[in-house]
Image (cartoon, rainbow, N blue to C red; front, side, top):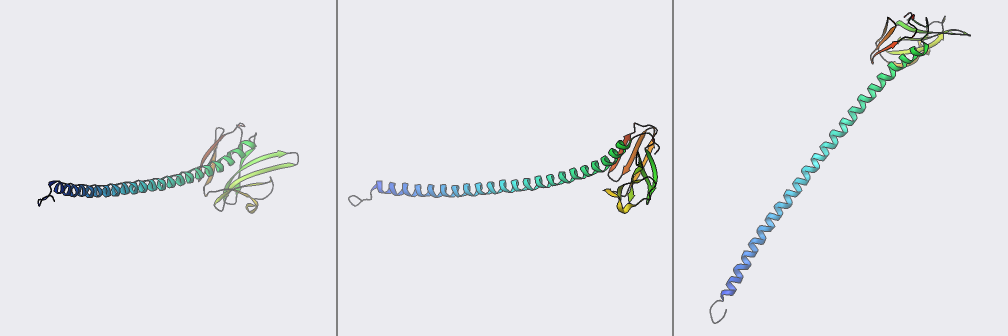
Length: 180
């Protein structure tokens, strides 16, 4: 105050200070909202990332299971097909009577005698047994190939078709006289 009258500069300074303070509070309020918005956006991004990771993990696990099942199927039918191809000779492919139905018999004639590889169904599995041709079936000693309730086969025009729970395999026999 100068000379008994309030100084206009002092009033202007007070008004400027109050205005500055209001602006600062408003900026702090907006800045606080900005922080809240940023935190919410970060949380949303984090949740989306976790959901994507979870979905990706489940998809990977599912694809792995499908791949394992396909591999098992190929192994089972592939083993049977390869056994037939290895034994493919004139009159080497035939049928027999296993403990639970027909068996696929692959005959091998060696200097030491005649031997058979018998593939048949036994107690919910397809088994393979190697034995002398005149020996009885002994499924307890047979090697388990794959779990499968279904095992059947057909032979037509040089094409042997084997049916299992895991799929079907066809083998074109080189020795067209195979007698399955």
